[in-house]
Image 1 (cartoon, rainbow, N blue to C red):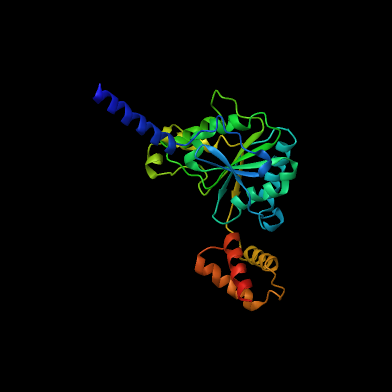
Image 2 (cartoon, helix red, strand yellow):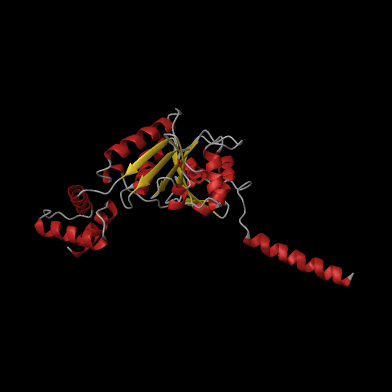
Length: 283
């Protein structure tokens, strides 16, 4: 009996340690919805984001078509009309993530709320859906910089939540995801080698079909492309004014901005903002 008692005592202490380290899923933890407009899902619970990014839609230049389409989709959603989940893909630094953040600042007074979910936490999607179901607010589940391998649990959870699960998706929730990969998964030459040709028809391999299946479940695709030199310079000029530079955007500033982009290997909105911040600080 002494050995059994010691064993049970050790088992109980081990269970206590596990209980303290494992995430507490939000089945009984209701967040204070009035405390913030943005939340982050971490370790099985929603944490309020007290100071979200304050970028505005008017700060995002050279992406007018993408901005118009996602604004329209978001307005439909806020008005209770049919709207689509959105996948924003393309070149880095072109405004994909900033556009989602700007939507919150534009529409938070209309009931829009943002919940940021990291890739490892996507397996908790059913808990998040249950948590917001029936709420009067309208929630965008924001997944930034997504890319998957097929065996990752978050991949299957997101795929099922978008279309395929027996559990109904919440009427007051949409998923907006950003990625540098259009199909969210790595593509290899081996996938193409398995493609079959039947007469004049091409039949993609099952691995290709699997990689496309997740991105196809987003109803609205928005593609972002590298900026031209003129677009890049116009963005630089905008951010210089934003940071309080009142001097004329002259040849010296223009050449410095171009050299900055060459050093960074990119003419993107992010690079333009970084240059403007550096230039304004030096002035």
